Image (cartoon, rainbow, N blue to C red; front, top):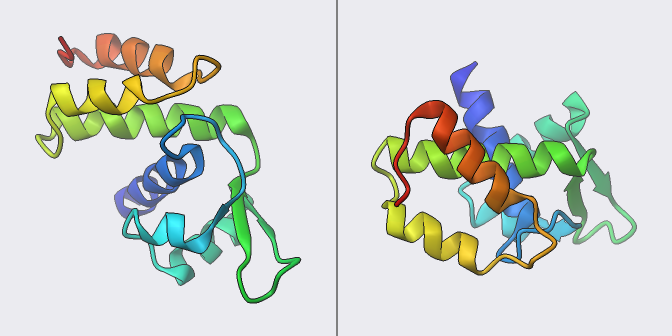
Length: 120
């Protein structure tokens, strides 16, 4: 179960990308987050992610609900800091790249407070 949750959080990071806005992304974006095609497809089967197979050779994937992608991306960022997989400075730098419309930064702050993780 923990593995599935972590895969979903990594997929959320792929979905929000470097600009912090959930959108349709190619499989390569998910593979860059160390997800295999089979793992992404399992998230499609579960209904968490939608698949646009208009181009069968290069399908696009996106979370079915944007707020879920934003929340899980924020949670993965905070958990990476908590688990020493990322420094607080790196987390802040990643968030600084997000567009102003991104909800992820506010969620990162809220989740970090709730989990007692220092990001300053």
